[in-house]
Amino acid sequence: MTEKVGTREKVAIVTLGCEKNLVDSDMMAHLIDEKGYELVDNPEEATVVIVNTCGFIDAAKEESVNKILEMGELKESGKLKSLVVAGCLTQRYKEDILNEIPEVDGIVGTGDFMSITGIIEESLEGKRPIFVGNPIFTYEDVVKRKVKQGTYTAYIKIAEGCDNACTFCSIPLMRGGFRSRTIESIVEEARHLAAQGIVEVSLIAQDSTNYGTDIYDGKLMLPELLNRLAEVEGIEWIRLHYAYPGFFTDELIHTFATNPKVCKYVDMPLQHSEDHILKRMRRPGRQTDIRALVAKIRAQVPDVALRTSLIVGFPGETEEDFERLSEFVKDIRFDRLGVFTYSNEDDTPASRLPDHVDEEVKEKRANMLMEIQREVAGDRNGRFVGQVLDVLIERYEGRNDIYVGRTQYDAPEIDGEVFVTGFKGELGTIVKVKITHSYEYDLAGEVV
Image (cartoon, rainbow, N blue to C red; front, side, top):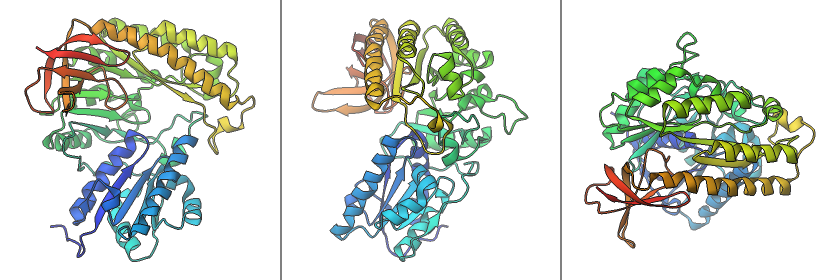
């Protein structure tokens, strides 16, 4: 039985950045709850606040610092006793945080968050603890997480870290080398989530298609993992994020085509289309390989939704390169697309490259690319009108007397939604909806 603490401190976790941080926050929440602290959503009610930071690009770092400062101001209200900073920012800049932000009472890195309750206790005692070691945590023995009530979808980390050494990316500096979890550990976590009412799991890793090669004798084990997860009772949808094109095998395409629980949704970050830029980025494959892979996926999974992310303004990107990238986007017609402006990250090879692009030019190119994608996405969305689609109902909007959900073609929070009329059941239910209207990114329809 877990020992309960004497004082019931109120703890709020503020999560910034990517889905990987959300998973870490859920695991910290479980440990905090087990210890006997009270978890609260509103930081203004908390006596302890944990800010789980992102340190990936300049904008994310700025957001993290601003949030830390904002939370530090809550000490003036008299309720906040301890401010703990976790996540990627601490892994790279722990000295800067401690020296420049005196409001911070404790720090924990990406590989040490399992010590969070001890860090809270020490910070409340005025010790200002620092737990930032090598980021080698594997999640292997941790399957319990505390998800918020009313949540029907959750992310699962199937691996941590990365070995790909893209020249623009600082992830290996913050998360370490690539480390897969065993299939058994991931399946057990899925069972634990299903018991809490989760019906959709999204698999994440910095390089998900490389899953298993480090622990299963070099074998690419993602198809096996997907099929094993499909056997978990209560899990209806399995979504895959961050699939490197270089490891997208025929066996994996076959799994997408044949397993009914695997969402027909491929999130494949390509970063660029032009070969010399891809080479500078140290990305695998070239445009001809990408086009061939996309064609093969669409041929075998005709209803697939393809999502990618692209970087504009990488050092050396010319106007001609950008025009070709724009034509590539028009030609491929991705269903979903995210665009990032290149961020010059400390200690990365790309930061030392010549021919950096002006910030205004980067922003202009990003806006132009998203305008192209807006038209493409609206056109692609139109194909669903008249079809009957499965929709996961996630919330009710009383003001408009309408329910809101998602299809398998839309990831939570980053993609579109479906506005549903005629629904009478429980939230978290997957129902048949006839699509009657399409918009740029969203759909509307009636329950069949």
